[in-house]
Structures are given as C-alpha cells and as structure tokens.
Amino acid sequence: MKNKQTYWKTNLKYLVILLSIWFTVSYGFGILLADQLNQIQMGGFKLGFWFAQQGAIFIFVILIFVYIYLMNRLDRKFKNKK
Amino acid sequence: MELQYWIWIAVGLSFTLYITIAIASRASSTGEFYIAGKGVPPIANGMATAADWMSAASFISMAGIISFNGYDGSVYLMGWTGGYVLLALLLAPYLRKFGKFTVPDFIGDRYYSNVARGVAVFCALIVSFTYIAGQMRGVGVVFSRYLEVDITTGVLIGMLIVLFYAVLGGMKGITYTQVAQYCVLIFAFMLPAIFISLMITGNAIPQIGFGSTGSDGVYLLDKLDGLHRELGFHEYTSGKKTILDVFLITAALMVGTAGLPHVIVRFFTVKKVSDARKSAGWALLFIAILYTTAPAVAVFSRTNLIETVSNKSYNALPEWFNKWEATGLITYVDKNQDGLVQYLADSQLNELKVDADIMVLANPEIADLPNWVIAIMAAGALAAALSTAAGLLLVISSSVSHDLIKKMIKPDVSEKGELIAARLSAVGAVILAAYFGINPPGFVAATVALAFGLAAASFFPAIVMGIFSKRMNKEGAVAGMVVGILLMLFYMTKFKFGWFGGGTEKDWWLGISPEGFGSFAMMVNFIVSIAISRFTPAPDTEIQKLIEDIRNPDEE
Image (tube, rainbow over all chains, first blue to last red; front, side):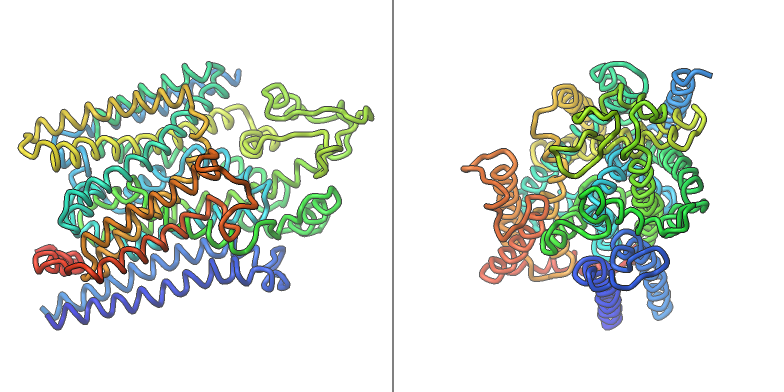
C-alpha cells in the first residue's frame, strides 16, 4: 500500500515537471513571450517564431521519451521491491 | 511515360497492398475487431496512430494554410502535436490499464452509470461524424483532381475500399493498413519537400533549410518578411490574431486532440501499459516529421510563388502556373491591363487568387520533379484520407454495436451477434459518410475544425478527472459533459450558422473565436463538474478500487 502511494506521488511529480516544460515552450515561448523572443535572432529564425513552428514540437517529442524513460525506471524499481 | 498511367499504377499498387493486408489480418472476434486483440507492437501502433491522425487536410492543406497565415498558422502546428504530450502523460497509460474497448466504456464504468455512457456515446458520434464526412469529401476531391473522375465516382471508389478493409479487418486490419499508409504518405510528403529545400536553399533537410539563406545570401524568412511588407501583406513571422485567441485556439486543438475517440482507442490496442506510453512517443515522432516539414514547405513555396509571379509578365510565367490555372485553383485577372501580375494585399488592386492547396500540390512541378513523384503524391494524399476515414469508421461502429447494443439495449447478445452488429454498423456508417461526402451539407467544412472544440469540451475533463480525482462522481461528470458540449454547440451554431440570433466577430465573447471557444467550454466543464461533485455523494469503494487499479501499471 505504502509502495503504491510513493509510486503514484513520484508519477505526479514527473507529470508536474514535464507539463510545466510543455506549457513554457509552447504557450510561454511560442505565444505569450513570442514578441519579446522575436528580438533575438537564431540563425535565420526569430526565436519566438522558431519556438512556435519548430522548437515546441521537437521538445514535445523529447518530453514524451523522457517520460517513457522515467516511468520504465520507476516501474522497475517498484517491481524489485515486491 | 504519361502522368495518368503513373498515377493509376501508384494508386493501384497501394490499394492492392492495403487490401492484401486486410485479408491477411481479418478479425475473427470482437476483441480483434475493436482493439486488434491487444497485440500491436508500439512502433507499429505509433505509425498507425500517425496515419489515423494525419488526414487529407494535414497532407494537402496545412502547409498552404500556414503559408498564407504565417505566424498565425502556428496554432495548428503546436495544437495538433502538443495534444500527444497530454495523451502520453495523462490518458493513454491509464486507459490502456483499464483495458476495455471504447471511450464510452471507460466513462460508463468509471462513473457507474448508463446515463454517463449514453452521453459519451452521443458525444463520440457527433465528433466522429463531423470529422468523417470531411474525410470522404477529401477522398473524392483527391480522386477527381488526380484521376480525372468526378467527385461522386471518387467518393464511391473510396467508400468501397474503406468498406472492404474496415468491415473485414476491423481494428486489426485497419492497424496494419494504416502502418502501410503512413509509409506511403510520409514518403510522398518528404520527397518533394527535400527537393524544394535543395533547390531554394541548397540544404537537403527542410527544417534547416527553413532557417538558411537563399542563393542571394539573405535569410529566407527575412526576405519573406520584406516581400510581404512590400506587397502590403502582414509580416510573415508575426501574427494578426490576438494573443488571447492564439492561446485559446492552440489549447482547444491540443486538448481536443487528446479527447478524440479515434485517437484514444488506438492506445487500447497494445499489449501492456508501458507500450501505451511508447506508442504515444513513436506516434508523435512520426507526426513531427511531417509537422516540422510543413512550415518549411510553407515558406519555400510562398517565397517561390511571390518571386515567380510578382510583377512578372503573364506570358512569361512557367508552365505549372498555366496548368494549375486550368484547374481553377489559380485565377488571374489583368485588372490594369499591363500584362503583368500584380499580387497585392489590397483586394482592389490584387490580380491573383491562389488556393491554399496549391502550395503542396504544385511542389513537384515547381521543383521540376519527374511524373512518378506526382503519382506518389496522389497515392500519399489518398493514404492520408483513407486511413483517417477508416479509424473514424471503427469508432462509430463500435459505439453502436458495443456501447449501445451490447452495453445498453441488449446485454445478452452473443459474441457472434455483436460482431455481426459491428460489421453492419460499419457498413451503415460508410454509406452515411459517403452520402455526406457526395452531398456535403454547408456546415461540414465549418464543423471539422470545431470537432476539436467539441471533444475538448466534453471528453477530456471527464476522462482526466476520472483518473486523477477519486472524489469525482457521476453527477459531476455527467453535468460537466452535458454543459460543456451544449455550450460549445451553442457558441458554434450561433457564430457559424447564425442560429440563436447569430452574430459577427464583434459579438464574440471576450473576442474568443469559435475555434478557440472549446478551451473556454472545457474550463466551464471542469468548474461545473467539480462544483456539483462537492454537493453529491462520493463514489463508493468499488469505484475507488477501480481507480487504484488503473493507476497501477502491473497486470495482476
């Protein structure tokens, strides 16, 4: 029982961290702060525009694979305890 | 060789492939028909989800829409990819652990009520039908454009193909045809994109070419911004829409994606919980290949279009211009009789109209690619439309045969009877969808985009709270779903079809467009659900145990 609760709490912690990044790169950098970030030039891109049309999508993919890694590790840890 | 022959060969070969796969993997039980017997490997499921998800609109229209809207087109790019993060983190693993057949299954069991199940079936049918009619139309349009048959014939051919493999193969057949369709469509999309990128920037990777310089040494995006300013258009890299509206539309598309039944059900088809997470990762990776290329294609073709036509003599334009002019997708009227093409933002002086679809369709000719590439594009566009139509069809048929007949009307139906009912309702749904494809009611085009708002306003809160809140009960969830979907239907019919007194952009609540309103309706759903659940009894221990079980990934 104790195990289950720690498992769930750790899962929720991962969710909060990953979803904060998800929110920041899309709604934050791609929308709310886009005009400010557009003052910064990265290669041929204005940074805010790049986040909205490229960067956010790359980071979304990375976020899911990080979550897969974290949860597989967590699953293994709790299986061993049993 | 003649283009028409190439097209018939490419389309014929790809259809033979789909049908062969369907025969090899036909379903023999309801478990195989609804969820492919829970045996799909994660990478295959990722490809199938990607094909399921990317429709004819993603393939043909999206790059063009972005190319005409610049930064504002970002709502589609972020909105239609960010939803997979929500799916992977908040929904897919838990719904897979729950391990039944459909989304209404989950809602009905978790909220211990057939009323909740019925409301969920109603929402699933509304969302799926608005979507599938658009897909059948898409199939017809692609056929008529490439194979020179009329739209009705095109819809009928598409209908027969989908009917064959969806009815025979069920989810199992659909899954493996979708894997094949993904391969066809991504190859067809990337090939011309890579050549255009090489032609314009010298870099073979469109995502990098996008931020590179053209042959004149100026960054492509800076050049495009400059061209736009010159011709009076809005600067490409900044938006016209308000920040609030961009925010809300993106949110509605993201949450709507995560709430679409035909996408969710794909995660029921894998062996275990960890596979559900993996499939979501693969799905988004496969989708991202197209979604990060599309904005690059948008910029390449936009720049190329302006440089090719603006202030050039009409008689000296390249061949592809006249070819597409003949289809009516490009129109040119020489208003000031100077023989030059004036392409301007000012509609009084502008002489050129360009359909958004041109940006993808004309790519092979602009890059001067051989005819077989065009043939592969035709096969790719059909793959995109057919795969999405088949996925939706399955949701409709399982809603009827499983949720309505088996769970609500006639619980004692035999497995064999249910399978027959599933196949019959698939046939019924195809015929209805084909009818709407041939005689599209005016509202179809307007509502496809709004299907996301409907899904966001109805399913998403009920499913998420069903997993993450043990306190959420049937009263709260049902009230939330009903209020959410009615509010969304009200707003969309009011501002899109002029019901309830209608209204124009000025009357939008807080300046929110109907496309972005789904986010607002979703918030209302959450608030209503939570408020009502506080004043009504908590779910009993049976349900508490179900929730505990969903959260625990181990199969006992």
